[in-house]
Structure formats: C-alpha cells, structure tokens
Length: 230
Image 1 (cartoon, rainbow, N blue to C red):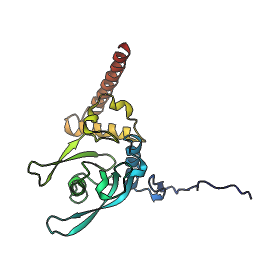
Image 2 (image 1 turned 45 degrees about the horizontal axis):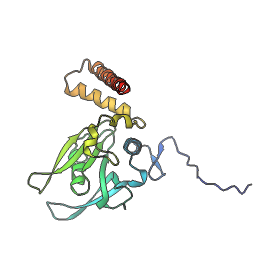
Image 3 (image 1 turned 45 degrees about the vertical axis):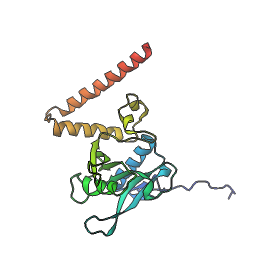
Image 4 (image 1 turned 30 degrees about the horizontal axis):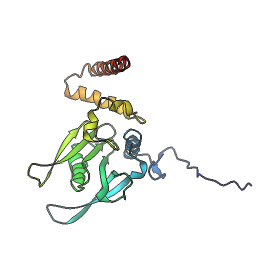
C-alpha cells in the first residue's frame, strides 16, 4: 500500500443516474433531471454563466397578493449576479425546468403559473426561461404602463453573462455561441415543430427547415467572404 494522496474521489453512477454539474451528486435520471442538467450546461458553456453563480432548487419568497400571506415557490435553477451572495435579491435569471410531459399552458406547472409568478417576486430578475426538454420559452419582464404590475414579453433568446438585450441581435454573436451537448438538436426540433404547427407546412416542414439551414449557411459563408475582401 502506498502513501499516494487521493485528490479526487471517483463517482460511480448506476445506469439510471446522472451526475449533477452543480452539486457533484448522483441524481436519478428522470426526464426533469436530464432537462435540468442540459440547461445548466447550456447556460455555462453557451451563455458564459459560471457554475459557481448558479443554484438549483432555490426557494423564492413572496407575498400572495390575494391573501397577503407569505409564500414560497421552489424553482429548479437560478443564476445570481456574478460573484455575489446567493440570495434572492441578487438573482438575475430564473429557469423553470419541467419534465417532457408538462406543457407550457399547464394550469399548475406551465409558463404563467411558475416562471411569470417567480419573476414577478424578484425585482432584480428581468429575464427567465421555461423549458421542458423540447420547448424553450424565454421571457423578459417589464413594468406595465401604470407601474403597479409587470408585462411579460416572449423573446427568442436572453442575454448571456456581460450582455445586454441589444447584444442578442448582434451579427457576430452567433459566432461566439458554441452549442452545448444536445442544444443544437433541440433548436432544430423546435424550428421544425414551429413550421409544422404554425406555418401550415405539415407536408413539407422538414424540407422547409432544410431550406432555412442552407440559407443560413450561405449567409454566413458570404459574410466571411465579404470580411476577407475588406
């Protein structure tokens, strides 16, 4: 037996387990847990948020406007301001992650009942995400015209670490974004489902998506050629 010091404990997972990126704990591989780990990796690798600035299963406190009683709501993932203490007042992103079967219009676990309610309770949080593995809904919170409530706007994306809302439409932003794990596949699936369900192209949704991909490739190739010519 040697005196070699063990610097890292090996974690052996069962077939039905996944390793949590935030806690390094083995978790049961439910669809909700798999979706959560996918979003954690996406926020870290694509959006630039540090793992140390995230926390799972965070309880948000608020006062029920109807009863005046204090309540708590647990959200699956929150992102805090970089380097700040993990308290409700420093939350800048709220992510509600459900399993594959939950729909965004669900009366108890859907978009309005969970994400909008949680964002309204946190003054420092203006952007949020609701996801169920196949559908991703990004929201922006804004004060309403009267100033007593909030309006929520659907976005195609939300800002990453150090970005503002204006940065989402930057032409060079897509070059710095490298899809993490299966997020690119999910983007294609969401685009296909949107064309299939909302554009009346049920018979040729796949080919329409393929056309969009080729148009995007052509646009980026032309942009690189124009840059080299300058």
